[in-house]
Image 1 (cartoon, rainbow, N blue to C red):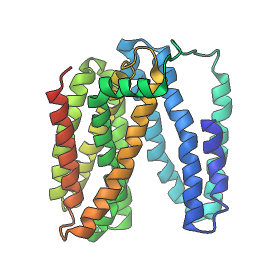
Image 2 (image 1 turned 135 degrees about the vertical axis):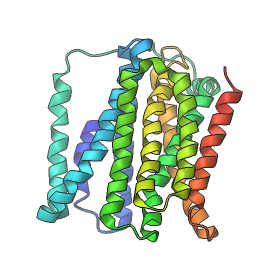
Image 3 (image 1 turned 180 degrees about the horizontal axis):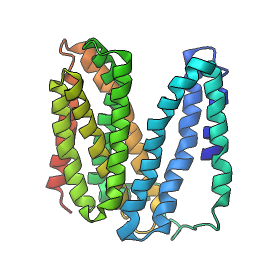
Length: 303
């Protein structure tokens, strides 16, 4: 369902007549992605041992981040030659290739254990056991969402050119790929150490973004932010997959919901801060505060 939805969406983007129509298509896309993303993470958790889970979840995330890095680069050249219509048709054909790849996978992986009891009770239990990791993931989501949605406008305010802004966004994606990939080669870092490292460096990166004014310092700051998210999100995902024993789907579904909450809260609060204060870097100070708060809470609840 997730693959079919993602494949159809580019064709649906050929039909909107207003921003509201585009929003409806994106809503449909978001619902479809939830079937692909959560189910994929749960499947990986079912198919792997605990000691290797972080590595394979990192590969899963690295694939997604690599797509976000390569896609815009290809799109830039396609738009100049074929326009948006050509770009959306190409995206549709790329989506079609996912279907035979999935069908080539032999056999299936069944859930290790079927969830028992009411959903509300299981959600409450998962939140109680994994709240520190959920909050860490939400903090990373807030940081990423502000960098992707608010920061480009701030860079233009600093007189960065459009190609420079695009390059900065590409650096974020590339750094996330590097972070995800590094978790596959240093799995001994462990979930807890990775989550300690993540919010700590996120706080530092956010403060660097507040101070950054030239291209080199901006690239350094966003690269650090992207890298640490790539390191500690898969580690948190691996830890969260164990919150309800072998029932992975529910706990990972909650995590993705928390990530979505951060993706809404980040730009919302960031936009309000820009409007309410004359100091444009205020959203990035908010990023530092959220990252530091999640770290303090994680340290205060070692269990």
